[in-house]
Length: 237
Image (cartoon, rainbow, N blue to C red; front, side, top):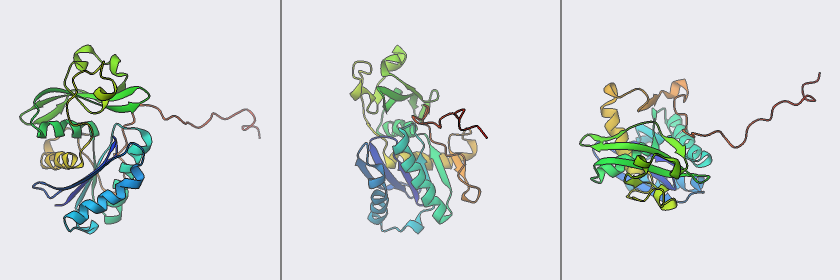
């Protein structure tokens, strides 16, 4: 196995490689805007660091967000294209899960909130319980003003950039700040090993021969731009 993980849902433009036993490479660039410019070089750099070629990759995993529209699409489209070109399976994992898993790998246990920057003075957030077996999400991610989250949720130790942006509402900042490609890869490999018993939707599998349905990004809000309704003039014969 050589699993390639890609995530562009946060400030980190990150990729990781996992050989089925351990993370063998990670390449990350911190840039909230230039996802397209950095992602392909990071993929090439990670492969080169372990002496691998694209054809050596056996599985592709992408973080499906939640995240801002443009950056999130870059990672998902790149992962889909890479997998399609090589005829590989591609899978999607919620990006907040990868942050919580990274905290778990670092030894954190107990309740945890992950809150990342959603812009517009909001955060993407989800609460987790970190136990001996890993990080379990309590509910689906939401997009909200930090101060509007329930008080008991805001009181939790909080990963992500949310507490650094809204320290008054989220006073208990802990690491990590962003998605790690290595942590995403590790989480995906663990879920692959548990796939027969995994809840539906926790790890989405898509056969390239049948398109890429099932890897829809989690935007959690409507797009800024929508088609204008037809005018009376445009509907005249």
